[in-house]
Amino acid sequence: MSNALSNQIKKLRVPFPFKGFQFNGCKNPACRNFMVPPICEGHGNSVKDGYALTGKGRERAIRCKYCNTYTIVKSNKAIIEEFERQSNYLRDNQTFCSNHECDNYHYSVELHPKRYHSKGKGTSGNKRFTCKLCRKSITQRTKRCFQHRLYSAQDKSVFSLLVNNTALNKIMLHTGLTPNALYKKIDFIHRQCIRFIAKREEGMADKLPSPIAIAMDKQDYVVNWTDSHSKKNVQLTGVTSIEAARGYVLGSSVNYDPTISTSEVVERAGEVGDLNTDSCFRTFAQYFIPNDVELAMSKEISIFDKQHLGSHATLPSKGSQLHSEYVVFGHCMLLRHLIGEGRPLYFYLDGDSMLSNGVMSVFKSSISAGTTHALTCGFAKGMAHDAKKSLRAESLLMLHRFAIQHGLKYKDDQKLIEFLFTKSQLEEHFASFGKLFKTTFKNKIHKINEPYRNAKALTRVDLHLNINELADLYNAASVERLDSYFQSIRRNLPLLGRPFATQSNEGRLWHGMAPYNPKIIQKVLDIYRVYNNYVKLTRNRKGGFNNDTPAMRLGLARGLVKMEDILYQS
Image 1 (cartoon, one colour):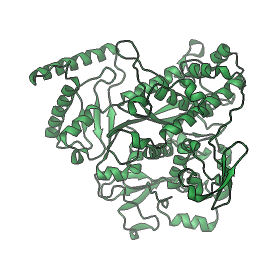
Image 2 (cartoon, rainbow, N blue to C red):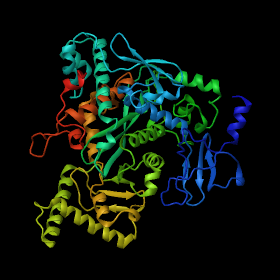
Image 3 (cartoon, rainbow, N blue to C red):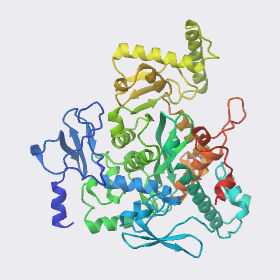
Image 4 (cartoon, helix red, strand yellow):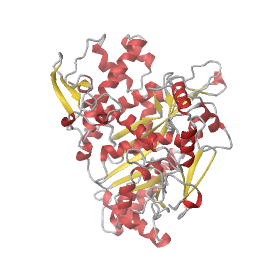
């Protein structure tokens, strides 16, 4: 690192804003200092901004002087770059300048035609343009020419088998495809799914209902080892968000980037002197480097992704692994891009502070305005099914008695009765604690899949919502839709299934179905998301199938979408 650059970093407390975004600040919504940007330069008591600089090792943190909340400092540049990586699929149906250094790289021909010169049409009939800023020539992709491909009649078969619990070797046995042909076909299906969903989700904010509730959580996936000497697996983590009422999956983002290798990251980091710099000031802060793995394995330092790497894990040999917190922040930015901040928005989160920090940082304006709120949701896990059925029966009996007391019939007014009962519970909670913010509300209405439900408000819900709005919020507080989707992934995608123990291997867990190439994980998750949202019909309680999909319930589709409509779209 040059002395000039080193001295410049030494003067910095936190990274400068990037493209107008500053994600560092106090994450406590009740604090007067909530997400107030810290002063970036200066040292010691000379800086008067309500924050004290702290931290351990190469991980820098700030402490809020008003509420004593500690926050790990993150790279604003890395978060924006991760958002751009995750949202890149939305660019598929628009035409942009291909020069990454040009401002028009972010402005499309379709939405900003004055930024381009028209140059007529090419041989394929597509319009051609020249960027006014960098003079780069580009072609508008309005007409796509699909080349004749081998075994094209089997596209639908592979699509159907892939999302319905069929291992890749069984797909090859069923279709007669070679491994190379199968992977090419999966690539084609993935491209078509991305093109299809990009058309539906760009501009979806205008079609969404109000208010909207989103459940968010993380799920781990394993990549099999490729080195027979070390035999260390790669463990990746994906963050997924789902519309909690209708089951539409808004996104699944995995902490893996196939476009750049770890060795390339290390080489570039060495060129700019990043290897020994505090992580938040690195040029490639979102990527793991070998030093990070060593620190993550240390007992003294637990602020890296130790829980996600595992004690017998390594970095992928192809592509690069990303720090999970940057993936979460980028995912929250993607959600804000898709749904906007103009309507009431409720988040139901797992107890992981990484998720809540992402929501607080990205939706800080609407949280301060009282239109966005976040709750952590939990329930008792590991209970036997009979015990859960017994609890559910007790809840139903309690609700029947409550209905009789209020002159109602449970069968006719089930939703109203649960709403009124939750409202009465909230009034009791207020009488005991005086507030909902940062206090655990225990819901006595047990669900068969969520016994002993509880929720804790991370935002000032009691200041911005009335008792009826609070009853709606807490009555619906659940991550059941997301848990069900995660379970569906494990059951229907063998590549991402759970490991199993074998007697011949002394009971050790075996990831026999896990992939060897981490790149395919994001692909099958994208394919399954499209299938779940637009094609798949779910079973109802009577054993039949519902006649609508999550996309239909959310207003993004008028009817059931066939696989052919996705595979052979014009």
